[in-house]
Length: 361
Image (tube, rainbow, N blue to C red):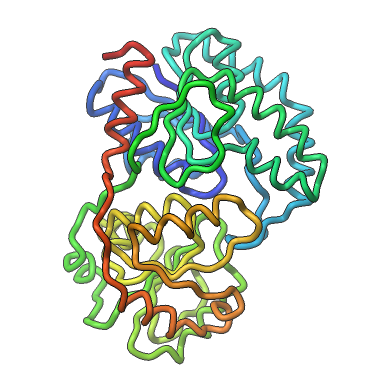
């Protein structure tokens, strides 16, 4: 058995881990896989099917978010303090479970995964483009209490057998053994024309509004009504939409045989806050990005700087986004050419290294 501990902060950790687990299952169908996470189980079941076991546990704190672009630093600190009080019992409980026939642990990127694996005496593989010790050290400049969890996270990360370092990486120097891998990215299941047919979409540019698991309630869809010549797509948003918008629930997506990556690839532009998951979806799908700010999150600057190498991008300020002033940014993104694509076989490379580390090959 392999157990994967996955952060519930956003969807990017879950979607890329699911791709690696899918690769592992294809190579060794007999391997039992368990995911421990607070992320939605459908993110894993879509990639690996119902043959994967998902156990619900908040295995890290991540960051408390008011919405997709607004970090609640005080709430994050409060949750971290509560998590620290449970730390020892969490590590011991997970180590006890891991001793029951688990071959190895994958972590993206809860410190708990590596502390528990070390206590259980089994190898662990981390996969990340950032780590929580780096994030909490940065935020501790304003909230000194975060430094305690930064130190604890770093201590846990030092116990990892191997880190698979993804592109768009921050400071991951705390890990003692590092292997660089290409982008881990989802691939579309249908071509853009087929997805648009299933959506009943015409010829005008399709703009996907994508703000992950946190959403962006402050953006009233009605502000987009004046943007003629575009069709906006919202997923899992039950608010009233203007005439130039389409609403699609997750259930409706499944009934039409579509997955979220299909919507990204069918769109001409994605309006979003930059995170690893949506950026790699856009690269894989050949979709342009209009991006906005997302608070004082260190990964943001790296993604903004480096994603331009692979994607046509344009920036829009939060206040312009909320007011529906998107036309200039969308047109700018649409006018920019695509650069050469990067390697997207990171999931296969990760699976190979995981199997070698756990002596499954």
